[in-house]
Image (cartoon, rainbow, N blue to C red; front, side, top):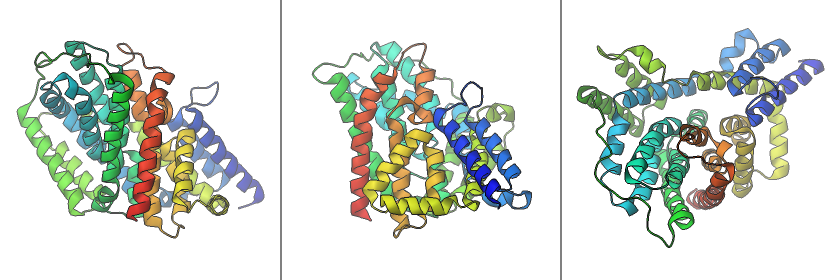
Length: 407
């Protein structure tokens, strides 16, 4: 590449990441997926990406895994699986059991299914529960947001950045779960402790149980089918089969139906997220071909990124500046050069996910909770930061100590 083309490539890369950091291009309606499309197109114009090698930059395993898991979860959602589980668990509790149940239910579901979708499902039902029982929904909504992020740390299928890391690192599903599952579990207890300390310490819970919240319409036949397929998909993950293949087979089986209109499932798909991934692959791939990886490696050596504490901190900060998926894409070329890449990949997954709890804008899951509950419960930036700061610091500290010890 010529010097002018290299400068143009880096300019496109930097401009794209500025939009990723801000969320939108100043003064315009260009959001993150839009910026990813524009940046990818401009990478072709600078010559950093050529038509004949464009597919080389796109990691189709990650795209297939994400798309397939979205389809699987969409069928579970439409069949009423999450409403059934929540109704079964949440509405048969004593008042003081409600908070930990919301935390651990959100965390457990997010560990095996995409956390953003779990938030979409959990928020309206939690609001319904609190409205029936009485009380303030704020602490329970914060529990959904923080717990879904923490729970998703534990597996490759918990969130998009873990799917990326699983694909790039080659770490198996059980290996990933064995190392980061304890981080997610202890993190949920820490989340419970902080929420209890800030909102319920020294007083009784402000809810009263009075029976079920209301019958949820369930299609038993559809629920049985999707539940069985989802169980087989999870069994395939744990058995060690390639996650993209297992998820794709599960999604394909879900699509074989005589009653469900496919368009209803397609409406559940976050197409913008998929477009964002593809554009980001091309942007980062083009920048790496222009020499970005060498600059990052030199920068990493100066910062001593191979020290887990430093790498955890840098990942957490970068994830809050540009969002976790772009941060993972940026740091992946550095991680592969570490003396212990296995632990580095796990640290990247842990820190990029747990850092999302720091602020409302730290993860898409947080934004979903706040926006879905806006009409019934207003959560301000400070409301969230009050819980997000201690939860993020405590969980990151434990995650770093755990990975430093278990490696």
